[in-house]
Image (cartoon, rainbow, N blue to C red; front, side, top):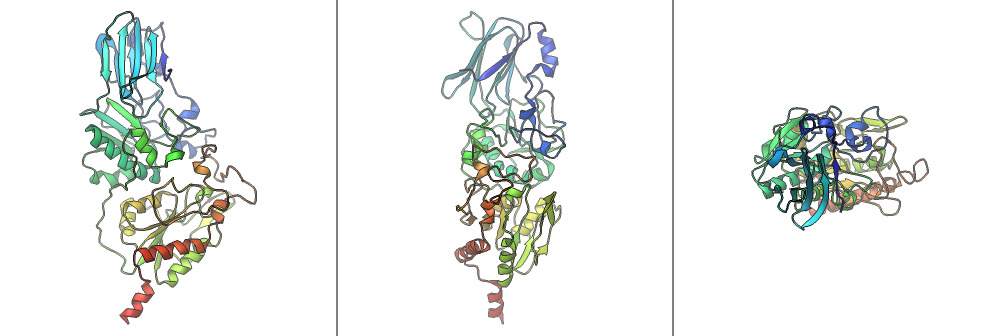
Amino acid sequence: MSDGQVVSNPDINASTVLSNSSSQPKETTSQTQGVAAANSAAQGPQEVTASVNVSSQQVSAKNPFAVDAPAIPTQEGPMGIRYDFNDGARVLLPKGKWHVQIEDDETDNIIFACDADEGWVLSTKKYYIPFRIRVWVRGEKEPVLNHTLDLKGKEVQIKFPVGTLGDTIGWMTYADRFQKKHQCAAEITMGHFLAEIFEGQYPNLFFTHLPGKVRFAKPYASYMLGLFFKGNTTHQPIDFRKVGLHKTAGYILGVDPREEAPQVKLGSKRKIKERYVCIATKSSSQAKFWNNGFGWEQVVAYLKDLGYRVICIDKEPVTGFKYTWNRMPHDVEDFTGAKPLQERIELLEHADFFIGLSSGLTWLAWCTHIPIVLISGFTLPICEFYTPYRVFNSHGCNGCWDDVNCNFDHYDYFWCPKFKDTDRQYECTRLITGKQVIGHIKQLMQDYKLTAPKDEKKKEK
């Protein structure tokens, strides 16, 4: 097999290699572009939604949520050899006559083998593999370095290199499982506003709030979570579109991929006396919206007729791009704004239920364990966590996000890979009707034995 790469330069000595981070191979522009790039003026194809620029140290200047691997391997081996498992197996060789093998200790497969006189040997695979590194002086029988990955008690970074709410929530449980499985000292690097809702719930983890300085300057190993497109097989063992947005983290980290909502601080005092329903109607691109022009108005009217207060918790009351703008539904109460996530949690946990899209606030509602009606057509139901009230219409085009033949374009707000600029654009959600969503609401209320608030008031009289 040739699942690795060797980079050597006979014209430089080992000390030059060790002090010059640019000697490590750089990833291509398409590999290093991520979610943050979508918010910049840069344009171009994108292969992954989360990546690392290995040519610099600590937090990337371009993406404040991305933490780079240390410039040189952190572990000292014999004869000046250095190695670690930061974003894959890494070996840095001084001048000499070497033979190197990177193996999968679970299977005894030799993943990569080469002869090298000096320089870097890097595994192509960056996700969790129980690597074994062996280095021989060429011609010798016994290796001078024979090291199998052992994370117990070691400093390990698990990196969340995006500032998006839904992705981070979906992946959190798997980071916790990883630490418990390996009994390592696990540093979780993520955006400050996300770290603050988890930190108090996971005393077994060290949280680094980004932007900021990392806790472990020389980790033994590190693993990067993310969504990787174009059939990427280097950062994920299975294409995320086949297993789900959240479960992909379980496969990347090599832990049980079964879903479980992460822990957040619950138990707040109820602030709204009347019974209410929370809704969130906004997202980051038009394909993610419920593109039925009458749907939200019909649902809100139905809820209000039941006697519910309907509270919109979107960050913005109006979002859009160019000629298309999505406004908060009429007759809802405006609780929009850039509120702290803990404040949103406290509002959600006392709601009778939540209605939203395949977006961050829906994942946040999942953490509060309330019933959820989830409306989406551009994703397949496998993409998100399970809810029996998942609204999906199979009568038209659907599931482009999870189609391995389609690659989401973060730069195109109006992305619709099959029917853009035709009468069929966004039919995946245009065909989801208000009646269909109301049907799920009725089933939810029946399952949870929820009476309409207006009926309760009649009994009180």
